[in-house]
Image (cartoon, rainbow, N blue to C red; front, side):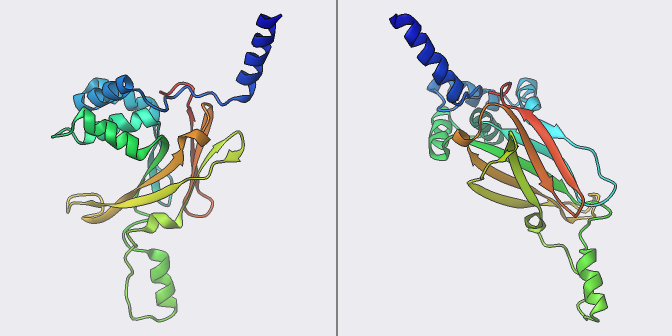
Length: 221
C-alpha cells in the first residue's frame, strides 16, 4: 500500500510544481563549464547562443527592433565571460552569478532608421507649428523609454524586477553619419517567476507597431 500511495503523491507534486528545464541555482560544475565556453569566444560559443536570439525583419517605417534575446541564468554567465576575457576568472564568474542571482534577461536591440532617425520629426513639427525658434530637435538618447516591453506565458504577463537601457552611437561612416544610432534595452525578471514553457516577448514602439518573438524555455539551458 505504501508504494502506490507514494506514487500518487509524487504524481500530484509533479502536476502542481513548476518545472524548470533551464538551469537555476547553478552548480560549480555548470558555472565552470559556462565560464570556459564564454572564454572560448569561438564558433562553439556562437552556436550556443543561436537559440537564445531572434533576428527580425526591417519594418516599412518607424524604429527597427533588429534583435531580441532571452537569456537564462546559465546563458548570462556565458555572455559575461565572453565579453570580459581579459583577467576574468572562473572564481569571479561564480561571485558575479551569486551577486546577480537567478534571473531571466530580456534584451532588445533597437536601431534608428530613415523614418525614425536622429532628428525627432514629430517634436520638430510641433515646434514649427507653435512657431518655436528652437529649430530641429534631436532625438533623446533615452528614446527607448517611450516604448513598451513585456514577457508573457500562458496569457499571463510577468512583472519585471528591473529595466535599463544604453544608447548606441555610430562613427561618421555609419548609416546615420555619426551620433545616436540606436539603443540596447535590458529587462530583468526573477527566474523563479518564469516557468519552463513557451515564452512570448513583446515590444511596442510607435502606434500600430508591435514586434514579438517566442522562445521555448524547455529547450534552453
